[in-house]
Length: 468
Image 1 (tube, one colour):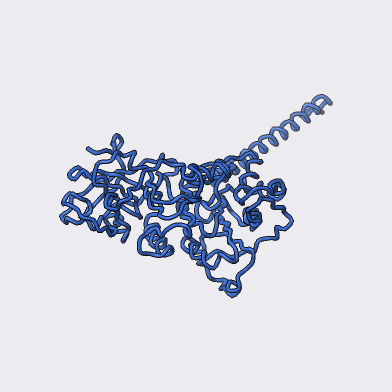
Image 2: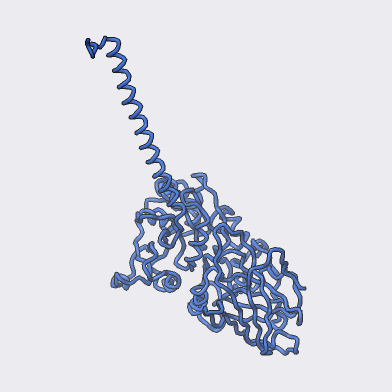
């Protein structure tokens, strides 16, 4: 008896099909597993990039300056430029000052200097303007061309723009740098916005462009510049090119163009509920603290910035029921005590302590925020206490404010009898997805007749800020 039969042709074909099918199924399974794994890895790395917090390392700054202005205005840049090598960027000049040629390369107190490229090939036809506006506009393209790695945001400003870097990081963290964003602010003056565009980020206030948008903008920027020889400034050229790409302005009110002159106390003391991102035009305004130079005053402000950057200028209002006082705390800067009850919306208005930017028609004094009159008689104004000291201790952050000199007569119920105000807070840490809400404050018992103590805290869910 034969144990094995010789296979027929039909059986051989069936066996071949079965073996081939097995290999095909095995190949498909391996391919699916491989592709699925690689896809999972790709998604994981992408989500990890999004979830990684934005830090100062992810920002690159492009600062527009000139040989003639840098020697003085570098003191403003030195205020905010971090010296721990955490910051990247460049200051762009038309040519290098002689003293800068001998500068130590290891000096990190200022950004490195870059000489702008030649822009003589671009036409400039705006009467009354300066052709250097083209060079300043191209700071955007030339900063991107520095080709830094792992950049999420490009931030641009002038040499007299005072930035608050930690607050910039916190604010930009709200946005996805992988999408196209153009972030900045208008001028405080209606007429300036009417002339140059409500959709334009004013360059002196500073503005930010997401890295994904910046890469595209850099490729088309020069060709776009050719179409706008008639424009006045650099920021108008950047705005026009972004408009051609279909990108509009995302407004962040923490940027401040400061198209104002004189005493900016009213503007600073009524800051919106948002992180302070920048200040501009220090050469055109009074020192923000009395009896100091402009640079000394800004250095004094940064003493508070270095303790609690996110709380800077945040305004809290509370009421003293015993004396019927209204108290406005602009943290890190000043405290005002009004001798009467003032409704909260009226306290939030900006006092017109400043002068208009340009002389002209009524529109030159029309602002983009609500204002209230600053009484011409100093003795009928609020009593102002300016920042004296600030430090962080076991009981929280304590800041003290001294009264600004006023030679006015007063009675026992007048806040002018006060000499010092102490404010106690916790360090402010704004959540990226947290809706902004003004903090509340309480007047604490004090044994000293010439002192007032205030505690700032988060408001309770249904708490209202009013005179009880």
